[in-house]
Image (cartoon, rainbow, N blue to C red; front, side, top):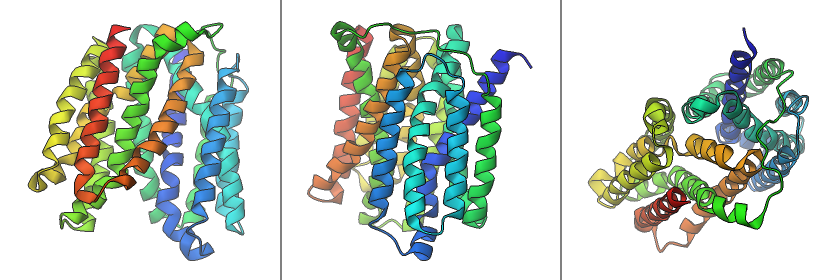
Amino acid sequence: MNTTTRYTLASLALLFWLGFFVATPGAVLPFWRTEFGILGEMAAFFNLQLLGLLLGVGLATRLHRRHPAVPASAAVLAAAYLVMGLAPSFAWIVAAAGVGGVAQGVLNVHANGLVGELHPRVRVLMLNRVNAAFGVGAVVAPLWLTWLPWRFGFVLAALGWLAAAGLAWGAPEVRERVGRLSPRLLRRALPLLSAVGLYVAVEASISAWSGAYLTELGYPVRLAGALLAGYWLLLTASRLGLARWVAADPLGRLYRLTLASLAVLLALAWPPLAPLFPLVAVFYGPIFGTSFAALQGRFGQELTAGMFYAAAAGGTLGPALFAALPGPRWIPLGFVVLGALLLAALWRAREV
C-alpha cells in the first residue's frame, strides 16, 4: 500500500470515528440517566467537550507536524472511550469528554487537511467522499451503542480508535501554510467562514427542531425520529453522489444547490409537506467538504481551523435562537431565514 492510499484511509477512519464521537451522547443518554441519575449534568458534559474542541482547533493551527500529534490524538480518544466505558461515576465521563474534545479539535483540522494535501487536484471530490465517512459514523453510533451493552460498546470503540491511530502513524507534515495571517486575508475568507457557520446553524437547527415542529402538527414521535435518521443518511449520500458534479464549479454549484434548498424549506410551512424536511439534506451534503477544500486551496491550513470555530458558533447559536420563536409553528420561518442568509454568504464567497 503506498503512502497516499494509506493516509487517505487513515483520514477516512478518523472521520468515521469523529462522526461516531459526535453521535455518542445522544445514543447513550438514556442509559446514563438510568445508571447515574443525571440530566442537568449533561450541560457540563457538552460545555467541557466544546471547550476542549475549541482548544484543540487552536492547537491544531500551530502544529507544523502531524506526527505524533494525529496518532496521539486518536489514542487519547481511545483512552477517553475506555474511561467512559469503565466509569464508576458520571464525573469520570465528563472529564473524559473534555480531554476527548481537545483530541477531537486536532483531528477535525488534520484529518480533513491531510486529504486535501494528498489530493490537491481532486481536493473537492476527495474531501466530500471522506466526509461521508463522518456521516456513516454518526449513523452507526446509535445502533452500535444501543444494540450492544453500552459499556462493552465503548470498549470496542476504543479498539477502533487505536486501529485508526495505527493507520495514521507517521502522518506527513503540513505543507500548505499561509504564513502570517493579515486582516486583509481574514476579510477575504470571512464570507466562506460565514457560509460554514450558517450551514451548520441550519443543519443543527433542523436536527434539533424538526421533531418539535412535526409533533406540534400531530405527526407521531416515531415518524419524526425515523425522518431525522433519513435526514442524516441523505446528507451522507449527497456528499458521495454530488461530489464529482460539485467539483467542476465548487462555489457556483453550492450556490445553486442552496438556492434550490429554499424551495424545500418554504414548503415545510404547509403541514401536509412538513415530513419532506429530510430532502433538504440532498442540497446541503457537499457544503462542508467543498468549503474546506476552498479555504485550504485559497488560504492555507491555518484558516481551515476557522471553519471549526464558525461551525461551533453556528451549531450552538442557531438552534438556541429558535427558543425565542413565539411557537413551534414558526419553526419553518426560522429555517428559511437561516437558509437565505446561507445563500447570501455563498453568493458573496463566489465574488471574493
